[in-house]
Amino acid sequence: MSFVHNARRERAAAAAATVGADAALITSGVNVRYLTGLVSTNAALLVPVHGPAVLGTDSRYGGTAERECEDLELVIERDIEPMLVRRALSDGYAVIAFEDRAMTVWRFREVADIEPRPELVPLGSAIDDLRMIKDEAEIGLIARACSITAEAFSAVLDRIGPGVTEREYALVLERTMVDLGAEAAAFESIVASGPHGAIPHHVAGNREFAVGDLVTVDCGARFAGYHADMTRTVVLGKPAAWQREIYQIVAAAQAAGIAAAWPGAEVEDVDAAARDVIEAAGHGGHFGHGLGHGVGLEIHEAPIISAARAGTLHDRVPITIEPGIYLPGAGGVRIEDTLVVRAGAGAAGSAQPLTTITRELLVL
Image (tube, rainbow, N blue to C red):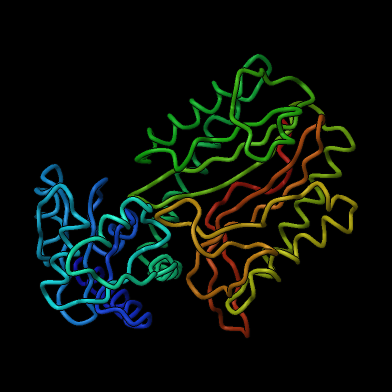
């Protein structure tokens, strides 16, 4: 994939040029991976506006970097950021863009004090924004992660029963994802039963499932570095009228959000399409989080789909749509799918689902 990574580095160099820099210092681990293919806990990349990039890492990852990044000059040193800044200065790059969203204040001071002092300018979210639009290979990896997620969920759905704890179910679900080919769970699975379902990011604990519970399961597999994200809410035993009611509202809200997600749509408009359904049903105060987010090498990445954010959806952007209603003391419902926004033959295109489990209420 060296040609892919080289093309990505060319776009990163162009981003550095737009902020008036001679080079960019990439220190976010996920962005180093995106631009080079190297997976490491200690690596950084110098990307000149004009000239070849230089990858720095320590001896623990030297062999891997030599194998995976043959097209890059490699420098092995433990203290990589100052080393790369000194290299930039020696090559005549006086203005260096840095990832201000990733670099700590302590690290910034360390590189800022190098003599002769570099001019450091913030790069902002430029590389994160480059990652937002995926190539077809990336979309294929996300689709595979979603397929594993759906298969695992289906395989252990019957384990949701009286006497089983949230934590026990989360562990067997995550183990099944790995058994089916995931490198790991994409995140710590959320399993929220009964009144815990009113907590959007409840940590699975020792509460046992009981007849009458709504059970929300938010899970995903990670495959080749790419993440899936899916939530389904099921009911254990015959659902009460209020449970069916809020489920139907959330399902309608999700359908509206998906219908509004097309290339060119503003993220606040997509959020509003779903949120308006919930507010019209009298539950606006019971839906406090944003409607969704991008997904890729990170489980949460650009774009953020929220009334509080600005941004536009584009072709080949994987996103989640995940409305919910949370009733304190009673329970909650969230339905979430990973989708990819696609340009279509029509005027707008659409968002196509990558997660495939039914959105109908599952009664166990």
